[in-house]
Every structure is written in structure tokens, then in C-alpha cells.
Length: 153
Image (cartoon, rainbow, N blue to C red; front, side, top):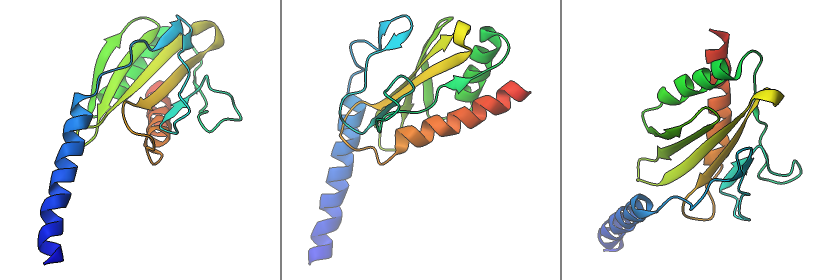
């Protein structure tokens, strides 16, 4: 009896979670200035290369040698290699992408190319929820490796 009731209830919860994930809207703004992201909230579902190094939100920026344009192109190639990504905006220095999970949850991943520092700052944040179970940090580290591979070509 319990299992017969549990399966439909679980299905409804999963479908509702997916619908909420699909319905969430992006933040009003991603940056404070052309070179600075808005900070991560206190929730652990956000990582940023501009967060304090001693915080749980910090990840290293993507480093590059050579031109900023070459680095930007390598990053875009790495991003386009993912089926679940949409490049929402790709300017010379700013890139905004969304990653969608199988359940429809959307994460915003943004990049700021810093030509004089030879880095690309990165921020990855879930739109809803509190915990992300490390999804954003793993995504950034995967993208970093793919970026390095593209730069080496």
C-alpha cells in the first residue's frame, strides 16, 4: 500500500520541481561594473572567481596567455560543446549563458574577460533553491579543463 502511494507522490513532486525550475527568472543584473560581478548570496549554490578566497564561494578565474579574443573564442567553443547550454549574450568582454538540468532547473553562468590581467572571471549560480550539491563548482572546473583544451589547439 505504502509503495503504491509513494510512487505517484514522488512523481508529482519531481514534476512540480521541474515546473518551478523552468519558471524561475534571471537576476535583475549580473554585474556591478563592466569588470565586477554582483556578489554571491550567502546560499552555497553560487561560486565566483571574484568571491573572497577564504569563502566557500571562491573558484579560480580562467587564466590565458595570448590575446583576449583568442581566449574568448576558446571559451565559446567549450561552451557550445554542451547540449544543455544556451548562450544568452556574448559581447567582447561579457558572456552570459544558462545551463538547464534534466528537471528544468536553470543556472546562470557568466564570464567577464579581463584582457589586462589575462584572466576570465567566472560566476555560476542556481536561480532557485539553497543547496546545489556542488553542481556549480563542478561545472566551472569542467569548463576550465575544456577551455584549456581549446586554448591548446
